[in-house]
Length: 226
Length: 235
Image 1 (cartoon, rainbow over the protein chains, first blue to last red):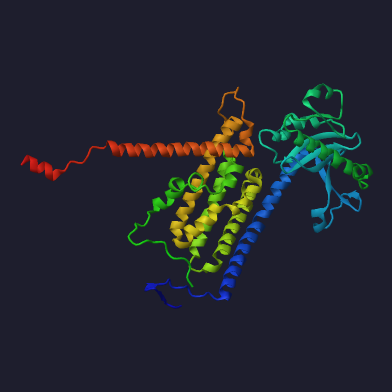
Image 2: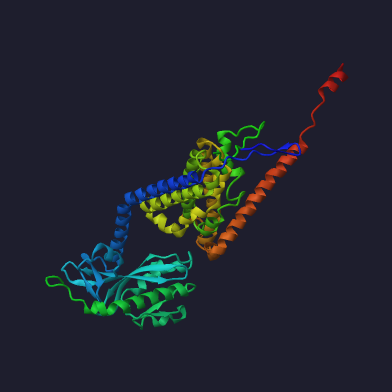
């Protein structure tokens, strides 16, 4: 540290230089403590978060398959559906569907997740599907960030209720074509002012069900199970 | 090692605890006066519920980071202070993100991507630089709560205008007549600008009215009587 004068005026005293190891130590300690706090909180809250997500999924499956007695998860492995859960790491990535059963143990259909880009972001849907009749049993929007007040109508029953009983591939009709809905088993009335979001829902459902149809047709449950 | 120069100015009165707390609520309100944190102000004020949730989430981050920065202000070298402050702020944002997902998952879903974006709210880093890095933990905590509540108040005000005009409701309760046609644009991103503009207009009008009233009161006040002269006259 040095004192100096300039034209009779005292110059500001300079700070002592901080050694580099001290700067590095400060950042390392701050990072380590921050990491520890976040990881501990994450581990502590993870079971609750997963339980909530599982609960939301269970409720949605019950809704689109009309309250089945139970639902089994089927995993897509090696080009075929199987009821055997793959190892943990693979299970996280593997595609899956949920097969529902009624009180008598008869299959009632499949609950299938659909993810499709909407007007704003990805829309997450769940559809109930009967592969034998190519017919939808129900549809629910799990997550969407479409424009509030306009495109978020795709989440409301006035739109979602139309899907029950419709035959895929779905066809979207404009409000002016309302009369055709009753005569066309594949027709769904789109929302005026939310055409992009409505189209995205239909496109996503058609695409995902076309992808799953051959696997669902080929699936044979293990002996002793329905 | 030294951090920042203390801002105490000789002869200037030290602010009271109430002044530290009230500063963010009105005089230096983050939304209306400092105009900081505009991203959430535009993005999530389409409903009062979301505005309150975002305001409270920001309050928790502001309070937590203010306390930690103030607590370690003499240990954090000046040369790495920005990185350290951002790390502290980001940690609290992550804690709030995980905490809301665990405790209030529906609200977490509604706020979507905006909780992580709190980390980029310039109000937070601004307060660390301007206040917490040079003040005690107690004063920094008061400043954090004041600024957080002031920000919540700002978001709520904009949210009130947008929800009433955009949906005809306030906090989900119907407040407009049944024949009211909601202004859909108020729910969309441009509605954020319109809503904020309307609120700023009202805020500026109110402040101007207060100022004119104060000026008028001074002008109309009776002139002080020169007592010694009066006394001389009587004598």
